[in-house]
Length: 362
Image (cartoon, rainbow, N blue to C red; front, side):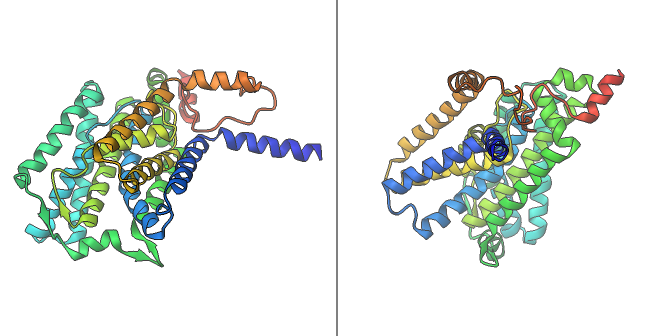
């Protein structure tokens, strides 16, 4: 009986230490608060609206997570989404390009935009914050240049179905999120490329000495972010049946906040895409709740800013808070006798097994 209790306790301890548990609890608390303060929150129509709103933010946040894991930042994702919407609308409506080909071209464009960011932030040694702040204006400027500031409406019923279609009663955006997050989680957890992203974010010098091409890994993270932004832009065009240079303003901050709320460290090397998903859901639920309560748009912006500031603050104070909690509850060192093995996402200061062997030979 005691042995069973010990196994159960060890399992619960390991579950609690998972990086995504905290974000999940926060999301559930926020959802519970909204449900208690307004009876409209749990209505099926509103929940469906929340899921549709969450899909685009969550997909863009995948890219933000990869960039943050590699100890970088991308401020241009919202502008890339806007640029994708106008180019998609222009290709389909004005040039008559078939929808599948237009989507493929947008994915190539997104990857190219990410490679542009990554090349100059990595090989060019320009701080990512500064360079992507510049491309934030460049991408949105190209969107205004392409349309002259005028939105493109009524793009295509076929494109509209890309967002609103259903498979066995399941909305297409939910399927997109499920597939993309599953792929991203598998890549980060089980592939050498994913472990290299954690290694580079945790300690670039150690990763470089272990034989990892640090600049390429950093660039690759931006390419993934560009692809995620392009997918988000295509889905936004399909959802709104239009393209506009004014779309997705502030989405880069929402994506970054989703990753940080989800447990990603702005210092790099820590986080998970599952936590990011719960972070994105939290942000969208907060926005939806504020809308249901009739909160003015200005106060919604203030609330989003407060959430971002709090998330960054928690990230900065994460170690101190963890140490205080262990001292308070007498947990001691998490690596002490009988402690469960560390979470694989906790890879700061760590490189993958294959690269360790290379470093040992050196």
